[in-house]
Image (cartoon, helix red, strand yellow):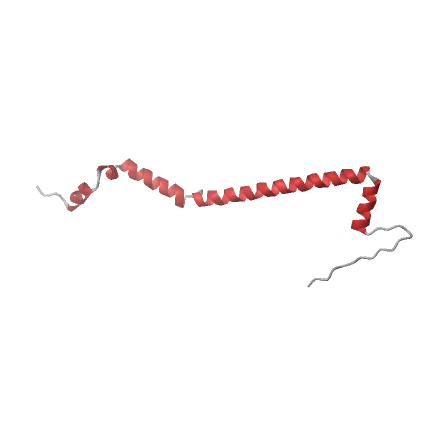
Length: 106
């Protein structure tokens, strides 16, 4: 009895590779890793985005804390309030002159 060409080649494949469940599992894993909407590349990109946002959040929380301390200092210390007004809003006393020095860009 002659075997068909398909059976000859099919029998040459090792038994574990002929397992339908193994083949299905491998195809499923490859699909999830490379072709799915939530593939590994997308997940890594999203994780990098989350890490960047957490770093920005920490930076802005630190800046907010510094501004709160500055605000508290301005509302409780008259000398600090006067210094802030002079530096940021160029305020002066009646008998003073202000000279603003602007550095030229090269």
